[in-house]
Image (cartoon, rainbow over all chains, first blue to last red; front, side):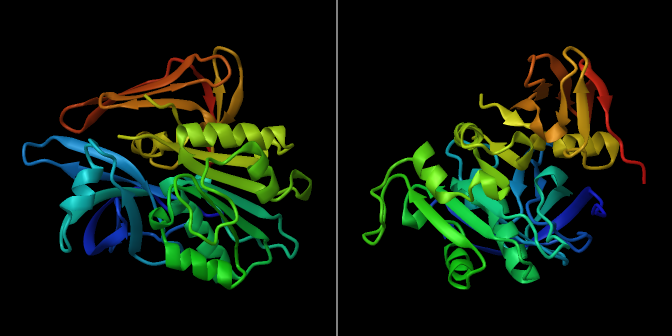
Length: 246
Length: 86
């Protein structure tokens, strides 16, 4: 696999729209960007007029070649960077981005005819890099079995709701949504946190040898990793990415 | 403070090395445990970051952000880091 070179770039905001009640989708144009491998992230740096700088990591929702980079940023209350991105960023603004980053947490379409299944497990906004993988899989049309288990507070909090629904409808991805606070009337489970049992019922069984990608807040990733190991998944087959609130 | 993981070091290590080291292997000087950089424990604060071994908790690496776009890297606990030559 050839790595895409990592560097600092100047990005221009070309679109800002609501993603969920607390998140915005940001479309960036980065003329010098080398393209996106699904699952990668970037560091975004803001500089105040007095020279003070703050940077944060955000997963990239777009995949494939091109200079367009799509982010979905959830506001962390009392955060330093995300409230600015969610409330104050405007079309035409320029920001600095460093990337693409995170080769460990990247999925590439396999070359062989009998690829291993892929299980994606997301907590909240942790779905962003996993959505990029699911979409890259749908575009590549490779033979991998793909499942997405997505734990989210309410139906309104689902990131890329229409896009993920379309991926599920087309059969590219098997989708399991776990609503932790409130669920739609048609849901087969009452709202509640993901449990070891529900996880085991929803994911590709360890015997089928899946690659597993888990992204979410640290406590979510820790719990899911423990349950996966208890269910017989091998440590080396589980790739995790944690984020915190800042 | 939440414990993150080595994915959070990707940008800082790219500043240092010029490439993305998250899927490179790293070995702890204290206990000899090895694995991908992305799997180590990382604590991030406004001052910088500290990476610790998940097996023995030894400090592998420290990054302190200074003014003027400078950072100070310390690597007290890294025995070896995998580099894939081009």
